[in-house]
Image (tube, rainbow, N blue to C red):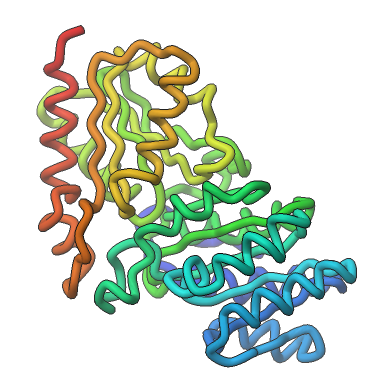
Length: 321
């Protein structure tokens, strides 16, 4: 795909999905695309390869089951839909039909976190905890729309299942210049260098973390930002490196329940490797059903918005060992 967009521009991740899948269909004649009635952005693939496109209607469990059957027959199925329903309504099918036999089914979808103003039933806020718990599942959460295409391209060679989490995917900020970072599934991205503390983040709040770091720089603080877009397998070496190089001062901010997501994954690395930390703060969704509101408004309401991110970072920097 010709990547002509630059940092700061707005781009639809959904359009990147559609374009990338249509291109991959040319080189992978075993690529199938399936959707539970969420196929508006898949028209390019559908029109080019109608014999390899399946819309099952509003039936996520059926969609995953068909994908499993196609994978058994040597195909690479991509299931595209809304994550609140794919991650929960079809959880048993994902576990038993895809993860158990370790099939190369790719699950990609939108509405990860408190986005879309659809209310609690239409937010995927437990999804990363659920997917990370599944054996054989690789779990990603992507904030830069251009990264979606690269991750999809890499996934064609993966032998097992993959989960790709997006926000609404209609208007997303391009975070990185094309070629600026080596994007590899399983490796985090150092989105901003710094030595005073590290903010770990993923998905839609990467842009917020970068903004927080820039504003803190005006106050004299030098903050590192890690885009940990792969939660499983997590880049444990990068976590250890940040512990050593930024004084063991960690802030994790994510659009997911505060427990069970990235913060819990990072905490596991800290415990398993016996890393020494000076301070650790996790910012995320508390144990509430969030209700309605714009995503930025809800992040502020529940304590993981821009100002909360800056305040937590100041606290960890001020902490003493």
